[in-house]
Length: 128
Image (tube, rainbow, N blue to C red; front, side, top):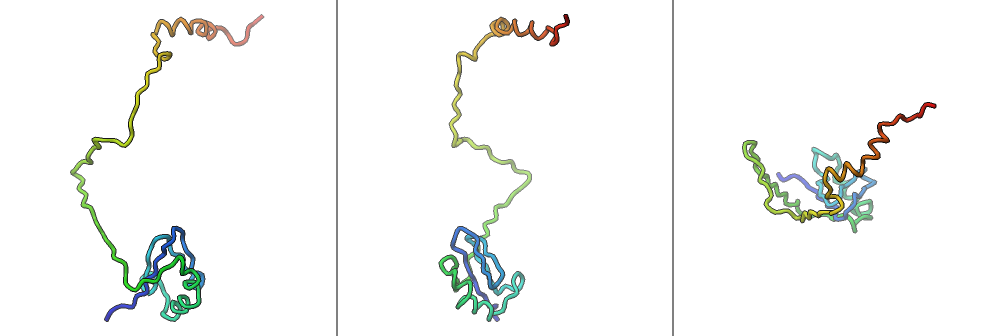
């Protein structure tokens, strides 16, 4: 005996609320309203909502499916012993720029900051 299914898909990029079923469907997702593990609706509630209720009013955002969606579970195996490969190429181009005003020697730096070094040695409050 095949289980009854009522698949509905939210085709908008926003979450859609179905007020009469007290349910919100996430954007771009499909759910089975007759799934007993997650929802507790009977066929009459769903049929009334799809004919004159919230599902009918939001038919531009919601799509009633005749078949269940194909779920593709591409599971990539992961081993802890393997390393993550490094990227040989990057999408970013790193440009190193050289500024001449920043290329100064230690002697030039000491000469330019000699007066500030003497000011650092003076007391903050001058005693009279």
